Image 1 (cartoon, rainbow, N blue to C red):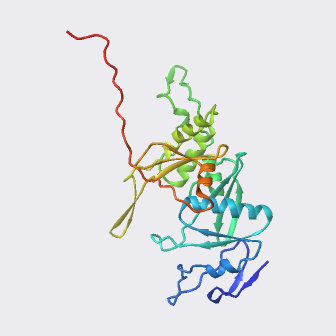
Image 2: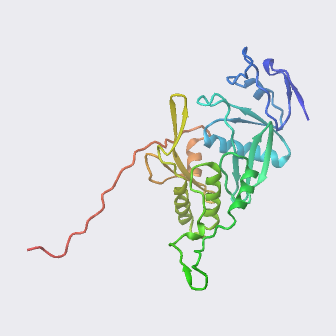
Image 3: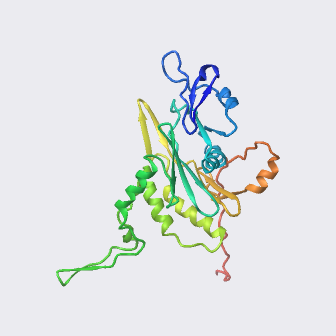
Length: 294
């Protein structure tokens, strides 16, 4: 179903689930500064507007609240791209939606359409597309948490294992999205069931240690400028107790936000919780000797 928009520069046909074409600047490029106020005002009663901001928390809230419910009800979704200043264009984004039962969906806007996948592995990284990542897992079906035992060659020549962990030999360890996807599946699928929510949160943070990008290890050169990528923060969500945990590059202390209390304190207003802090070290207590030295 298509409908007409009569919003000045936004005249044209808009189709639910498709990204509207941006107005053109005089140089022929799409105008990325359009505030989209008219489009929002003209949205139909069953349209959901999802503006793709760079802020990850806004993305999570927007996709969970609007896109997921729209898909379930067969309603329209209009994706409004927002340019990231550093890129000069809207970034390619991938969304993961998860509920308290553990079920998960992946949503990928691609070529003007929303691609929706059930997520059987509960993992998502960046490009390529989610279906590509699932196919790529077939290259690693031999990985196992069990150590490989020694083998005999020629009847009397034994090749013993080097040490612990050889069942995961071949697990990619770089910071690229395909490598991170495989690593995330391997570690999450072999994780032991935690006894409590607190144990589970700590276990997930340990798994996430494998995805930290140290400052300086990933660089991208653009002319004379060098852009450095690193892990700014790591977060863990407790969907049952509605608590959000995080740590940052400058402070590895795990901090917790009780979402029920935070929403109650906000009083239907948009409030900000600062993540900025500096790591403090605590000296260990050194026990005194029970014997006196003479």
